Structure formats: C-alpha cells, structure tokens
Image (cartoon, rainbow, N blue to C red; front, side, top):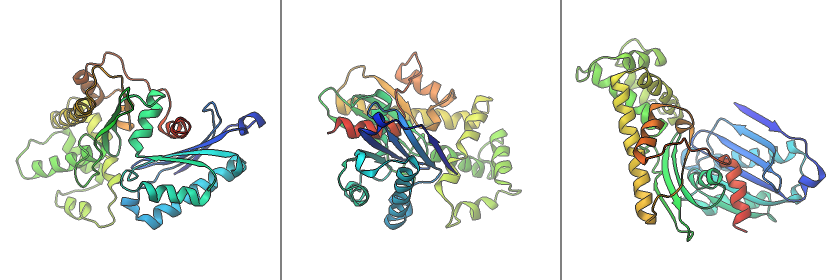
Length: 312
C-alpha cells in the first residue's frame, strides 16, 4: 500500500525545508517539513527498507525511489532542502551506507542518521531527552539523559529476540498452536483463531507455512492483533503471552534506566502495539508506574526531521 498526504506549500515554508525518513520494520515513511515542523508532504509505503532484510541493493533502490518521488510530488526544489534526518531499522549497524545513499541524492544537505528507535524517542519527547519503549514489528527501548548520554536495549531483530514485539507475539501464537496440537496445552479461542486466520484445517500445515523461504516476518507480526484481541476477551493462553511480552518490554526499560543511571525519567511509547488501549500497554504502564498514557509530541518521521535540525 502506498499512501500520500499533502499540504499546500507557501513561499515562506520553502525557506528551510527538512526531510524526515522513518524506515521501520514494516513501513517506510518520507516526510517533507517546514522549519516549524509542519508537514508539507508525506509519502508512506507499507514495506520495509531494512537492508538486513532486503539486501543493500534492493534497500537502496527503494529508498532512492521513495525520496525522489516525495521531492517531485511535493513540488520542492531540491536546492531548498537543507536537512535530512533518517532513522531506519538496520541503520545502527550500517550508518555509513545509509548516509552515502542519501548523499548521492542530496549532496549539499546536512545529513543525520540513526536507528529507527532513536528518531521515535526524539519525536515523542520533542527533544533529545527521555526514555522510549517501542513495540512494533520489532521491539527496543532507548534513552538519552540530561548530559546527552545515549543507551539502548533490545533491537536485536526477529531472529535473535525482539521480545514483546509484533513478530514475537505472532510467533508465540504459532508456538502455542503446536503445543495444543501435541496435547501439551489446552485448546482455547486463540488456537481456533490461529487456524481461522491461516485458513488451515490441520496443524501439520503450520510446518510448510512457517518454513516457506518466501515467508516474510511481517506476515507473522500481522498476527499480533489476534493475540491482543483474544487476551482482551479473556483467553488464558493469549493472556499468558501478553503478560510475558509486557515483562520483556519492562526489562528493556529497566536496562536502559540502569545504563543511564536516571531517576524517574520521562517515558514515551512508540510502535503500533503500544499506540492503543490493549492489555500489553496497560500491563507495561502498570509495571513502569505510569498513571497517564504517554502522549507523543511528534511522530517518528517528524522526529527524524527534528533530529536533523538539533544536530546541526
């Protein structure tokens, strides 16, 4: 799915243009912003640009296409673009690759790159300070203290960990189905929802489905809402999964707090699984001790543009 939002551009807004790029685990967003962070144009693609998933060549092509398309569709002269901030999954390990890709398109712009969770933190708090817990396709926590010290926890990717993430919840749902099939766990509504969603008639079909070399981690993470819905309806198997996921996110949070040696830091949430009222969010808020739902100031894509400004 490819979605575009636009705002009429005034001459004043063209004086200092910045671009924010948010490349998460399942969505690529390119936003063009005025000096006061008013969004002029937003280009959204329901696909990842993570080079660890796509490979560097395909990720580069997707990123360049999206960036050039956004600039052209917004009617912006590339010479007016002064800042580019980009936060992408996989960028922590490949910052120079990302910087080089962006430089090849806009060589005169000030370019700042970071992992996707860092731009989410900056956007949520509106500054480089505070703690963020993220649960989307993947999971992570990060924080920046008053001295500018940065720390993070999690973000290992779906093959190693990502506990409490959408992928992890979906995979735990599939694992629960295998335990039910083997008689090691009682059958609940979660089991029935699994087979209804996958359109399977027998449990053995899970093997071919999960080991299909073309299977994308996004297809597994898209099952997370089923787990959340079943948990909210009282399904015991789903509740156990959600409780475990909330505890894993909480441990990520605690690890960041310990690394920064912070006391009572401001906390924000990011990612699709923490953006609505679910058992996962309620449990995590309870564990952290939050009485009010965190309300982010800006989106991660706007956070990327803000990052480019404040790092100048």
